[in-house]
Length: 493
Ligand code: PLP
Image 1 (cartoon, rainbow, N blue to C red):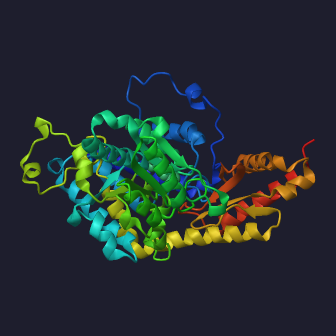
Image 2 (image 1 turned 45 degrees about the vertical axis):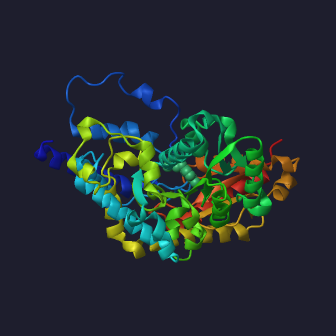
Image 3 (image 1 turned 45 degrees about the horizontal axis):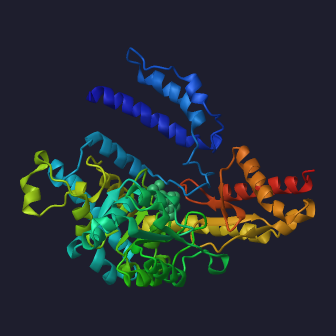
């Protein structure tokens, strides 16, 4: 890296990005690109000669930006947000600048120790109000500990693997096909994928059905009944995934009662709070984690709502030895005195890959730049904006809210009764709402996504971009109303 070139080109990229953020509202939020648009426009082989940064940045503006969906736009209300911040961005720059590979303590001691520190800081932020109970289990000082993974999927794979290995040590490897894992029909699909990757028989990935009457939460009673039946038919229950903030509707499974059921069968209980976990640093949301002390592991994605750029999943385990026993490697070329002293953590034994980035730096930058209060303020602002949106929806009798709103997501649709006045059957409600969403997104002014639960198609409105203000929420609502009005006035033949 030539420092002179780095300074010059680096400033150009920063200027480019500052302009991008300044003008972000001028781009269609959802990319309007058609499949193959870039494949057709870029050369089919790499250049023979070096090209200047000016040329490359021009091409980013001309070729790449049209194919970008602007996740950081204040009018982005889709999926769950991927919130970033200047602090995290600058942290990423430091990470890239140092470009160390922190697979074990020896390979870059600060990478490991800062990660341990940040994970303990976060642990404390999440403890309110059961501070003492929580720290007792998940802290390094009590046999547990935290580690940064890229994604929740990786956290699932590692904890599933740890649970699988420790049970097979007891019952014998010949019983691997009997292992069963549990979740609900609202659990994120990455859980099923992870279970398959660690070799769970797909038939034994057991989904408990949820229903509207219980707000689509996983029922401890139904779980218990399913486990009992499975044991009778020869299966061995090994792992339960509990979700705090489900992907479709942001519903919350009852963590404590579900942990109690699973503990009776000696199962590993993982609490996946990928999106909603961040909210639990606010005392008023912490109760959603009540009972987490009964779980074996807990994770949330700082890259979803904690202003930390992609990717950053925080995972804590109660018993770190379960992880390290199943994931440890001991190559000669990595042997060193620090590891042998037993005084250090070697994170390569807590995750899938060997090489790892200095992820903790960006999280540390975020935590220091915002402080706990600053982060709480952002969460509360987003939740309040979602509440405002909910009020607007509720005040318009043509619309209905599908499930209670707990965090910063509102699930809504145009109600079938209203659609029925213009259309032949109530059955067409799903189709109408799908068309409504498509037409709103096609304006390029906002971007929202949908889900279908219990046969009902609905629109998800998620606040989470750091640039979103009330005027953006009001604009989005006005657009939805206008599109709905014009569609209701012109029924399809
Ligand atoms: N769990 C929940 C509840 C999610 O909402 C998501 C993604 O939105 C995931 C897991 C998957 O997260 P990742 O992409 O980090 O694997």
